[in-house]
Amino acid sequence: MQTYAKCYKFIKGVIIIPLIFFMFSCSIENKNSESECGDNQDALILNHNGLNREYLLHLPQDYNSSEALPLVFNLHGYGGYAMDHLAYADMRSLADREGFILIYPQGSCLDGNPHWNSFLSGPDNKSDAEDIDFFSALIDEISSTYNVDLDRVYFCGYSNGGMMSYALACALSERVAAIGSISGTMLDWPEVCAPIHPMPVIIFHGTNDEVLPYQGNSDWSSVSYAMDYWTQFNELGQTPSQAQTFSDGARLVEYETYGPGLNQVSLDLYRVIQGEHDWFDTSTLGFDMNEALWDFFNRYDINGLR
Image (cartoon, rainbow, N blue to C red):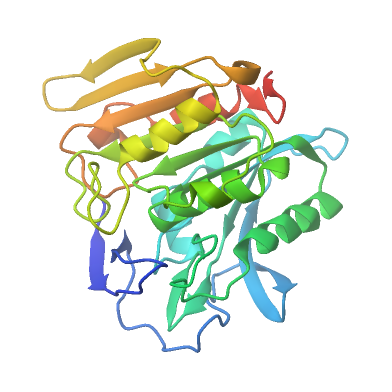
């Protein structure tokens, strides 16, 4: 099992969750709002809106610049750091085997804590970080240096990183082919969620998540809220087209897929029974979640089913 440290921070409209992440210390330096955050080892830098934004880049071992490769972003949770999230949610061997470029970006600081500004609009948003534009600029930066298949850009994230993946599906859909949310939630902004194409979505969420509860609470929407939005938007139908249970006596995961709908896209849900607020590993699921994420992404490009 992973080792966690926990702190608590409450910021209305941005991230009102416990800080739960891999090997993170609560005694970080107090930095100004929307400042640089990071100091990740071997990080690359993109200066965006006057901030030096860090990111970790992994190229497949057999990278050949003559071939355009998919691009996968993996986003840390609130209070997290890219290098710790890479250790916690390491997809490098998968990228080597499957042939995609892998990015672990660093969120900027909000009152001393790394975050993603996944709140698209509203008066309660306490962050000025322009993360939608940051990711667009980062796609441009990477594709200017490496041969990227811009029809195959995917985002997944843990907790606040899952929230940010939903936000990017809404506000940067012209550049996003599919998203994944792990222990995340979709914020309640349907009036400003305006994807320009059907969006494949994959969700992993534990039923015992006390940070972002599966059933939602007064602060956070439920998993069903996100599912309802994307099944309606993608015209997938309200009942699963396939359902399966994975169990070995110690673990239980309920799998449902909805669709295919518009452009033959689907929504996949992995309901982790008694699962907590985790980036789930094989000991929890009984299978490799990273591979399941990639298998889902690999089915789609920005035009739908490949």
